[in-house]
Length: 250
Image 1: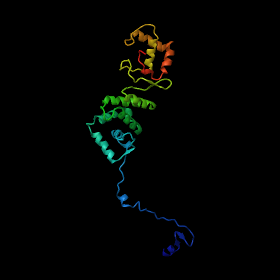
Image 2: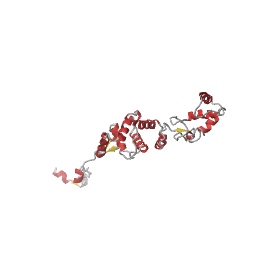
Image 3: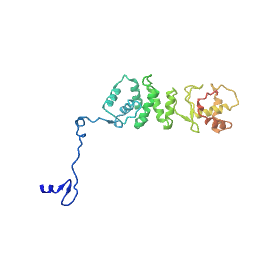
Image 4: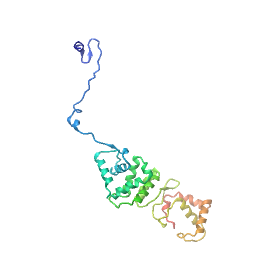
């Protein structure tokens, strides 16, 4: 063995000229430093692997930032919030999430978006929303097309509890969130607009706020048969951006 070693100089066998592999490993000083040897690796938990409540709270404490994972201190804060029964805002959010089927099946990015939407509509430092109101918003948000969710949040933030974002045939926002002279419990849509347009084409006089049954039935018939001049007015008004925000009297 000693003789063999004499033939090897700088990794080359002087007898054969063969370059020998260097099987030694270079452990740099930095990897063996005492600081690295003693520093504990951060304990991270992937949010998607956590229970639903914790996934909701992870995005809640993110302050607008999407959290892919949480560290030990963040996890501790999540557990604290979950157990804080005096925090009605958080408890209502958790209960609402558990009562909306679409929420329970949601991916993390959607949970992030909807939690932050809730915080925008109902500021944490403001009045705590009722559980039923939060559930209503969550259901509406998931039922709304992705492209319209931003508009939905804006309407709700203004206090307009719309159940959908309606669009004209050209794709413009048809409105419907602003208060008009209609009953606040009345859901005004492009279809109900057609009935109002049909009534406006009738020759008789009547109180538009106390509609006679005969007038309403005749208007429905006009819509169904697409009679003129109703169908021309309908085509024009349905294409008008914000048309649902106009009062009935207009």
